[in-house]
Image 1 (tube, helix red, strand yellow):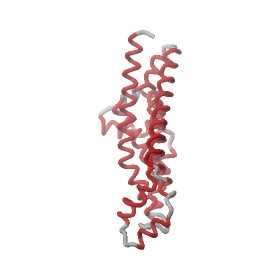
Image 2 (cartoon, one colour; image 1 turned 180 degrees about the horizontal axis):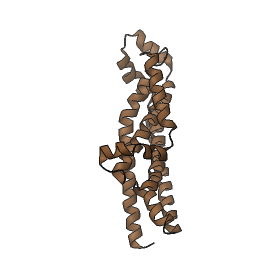
Image 3 (cartoon, rainbow, N blue to C red; image 1 turned 180 degrees about the vertical axis):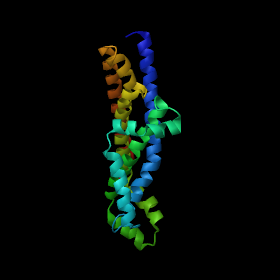
Image 4 (tube, rainbow, N blue to C red; image 1 turned 135 degrees about the vertical axis):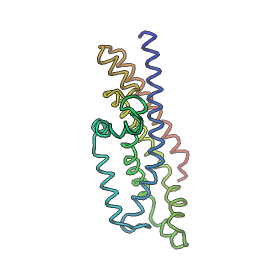
Length: 217
């Protein structure tokens, strides 16, 4: 590959990292509380509110059911409103974040459901408030599973960010489309695939390592 392509590959890698880190961070900040709310407002739980829980569940499922490529196109007006453009790295962060928030929420809900309800009952018997139960029982007990869920989210976002290249989203996907596909450069396609695989392997290894370290069982 020419030096120009190598420079473009490095730039695209940093663009992808930027998109994934920012969108994953926002999704974690919003998705973790969302998962907590979905669980605790369910039937028989500490903040039971069935109508609200069902409404929130429908919203999350509706968002998650949209293929990412359709979601990107559907929210172009919102992306333009927030960023000022619908193409490029910054613009791609908007649909990535919107797709990731309910995804994280459902993963966190599943992680929290793994916590033995007997621990919650014991905390209630000792007079703990719902907030104390969430902070001192649910989240600490489910932490290894939560980290694994966030790892899955980051890996999914790497794939989504590559898909965003189809509509000029920047990053490795955009490089693969513009140089690899449109200019018939299989070496560029292969290079982007290898970089994406390495990124996924690194994220998975790091997530698994952290999850093992925080697991006190």
